[in-house]
Length: 175
Ligand code: PRP
Image (cartoon, rainbow, N blue to C red; front, side, top):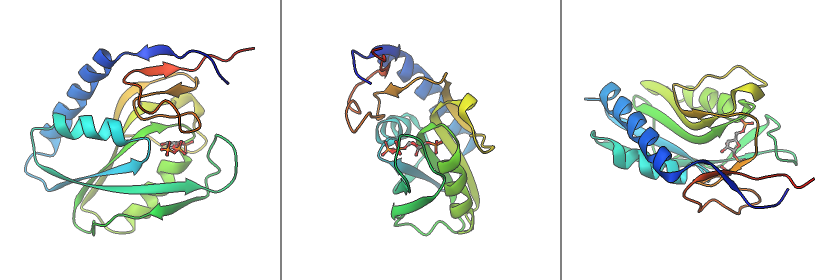
């Protein structure tokens, strides 16, 4: 897969949607001690914009995950390669992720974090490839639902490239 990326969501469109999500989250978590958990690496750009759009205080922490097995899709066998530094028991936790595809990664992460007994646990994803689910998973907050295309930019990569792009782009396949 190579070629020139085409813009799917521009920087301006993304800014507007992230502002809406931040407004909803600010309203729903007002008065609660919110901990935002970003899933590295892909979520770093979305999370940075989201927290700056909030008008309530929050703390942040990060987790990094790896899927066993090769290929560009998850195997469902997930492990933590960098764990949280925060004890989430009794905390209101909002997991922030760049994309949900098969659902295997987030289903596993939610189950794993739930065992640590947070006061609440919700998930905010920037992009949702809802047609691709292999396990049932519904995010509490979704930026955009997208078709099954290979998207990059705004934190999302192809072989570690393109994360820096300010727009979300589709990599065109060259036949
Ligand atoms: C992406 C994304 C999710 C996962 C979603 O991570 O950030 O963690 O894939 O796929 P799923 O719903 O099919 O499980 P990736 O492995 O690309 O790592 P990255 O965040 O470091 O780019």
